[in-house]
Length: 448
Image (tube, rainbow, N blue to C red; front, side):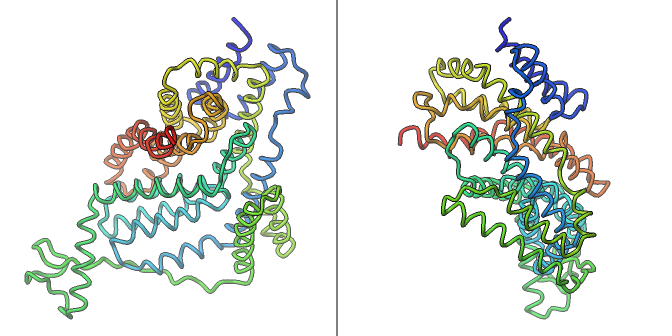
């Protein structure tokens, strides 16, 4: 057995052992890099560690530290409360409004920050008689859609891996495509799980309010009754957001400066590490309030940093060994490169449903490089975008953190149904996601 085959088997074992034994994938991958690089290939320790992505990890540290401070100051909670106040009791807008809110929060360093919105959304779904499945899909779509923002961990990962593989990549376009695709997912779920009834209820409530009926429906029945009367919107006690503090205002300004600066520097093609900027801003905020700065340190996503570092280090060992090149030769032997692309996207979705989205993206993008080079059949296409989105759409399945959090946040009597619905929906995305993304982001460019 050749060293290349051993190394590829090692990559498969990293994913398999991590899923079956619940061992941290990044730690496994880092150890595997040492074992294969030193023991099989004969490299030195410095050679193995040369693939460790220091630049990417600085980005992750800076971004998660800054947005950790934002959460510690209550800025994120303040923004969520203000946004919910704008939506009010317009029941048909609640799923969409909460989707937008959670998407915005998911952009802020780590998509897991949006988990704070999930219990609120699922509670409002029960209170306003909105399908918990619909709301669950909206929350999942928000989390995975915002996760591919250039200021969020998964988006940073895709950009880092694409850059290290010398693949043309536009972070803004990736984010736009991600939000667009997930918006279509929410639209489909909205009409499949009772959206028309929500629109009708909102219209009836508005008509009753405008007509001054005093709670009497158009058919003469009491409002909200089951006899066909006008259904008024259920009202819950809405917490009035506290007045914004000076520190919270400073944090909001800092976030706007970071985001605006990122797009400006990208437009001007200035080579600067976003993490350095974020870390600088975070340290300035820590100087203003050292207590918040200390608490923000605990919000740094060290687990994801280890995950990304381990996977990329191991993939770099594969690259130096020539295993990626061998896979490229095999890929070019496929008469239809689009078939190979479809298989890679399906594998990405299937593995991501049970394991780490970041891990599978970090591993598969370098494996896809041979399809994107001249002669590979998919040059200058949106395949990387399709692959990343396909890997994330399945995250609503309750086998992973996102889906499990949604199910756990659902009111008890709805949990079995939501668990079943999200399982079916998530597994269907294993096929639907790759087909839709390839048809829209890859196929049109094959004959361009």
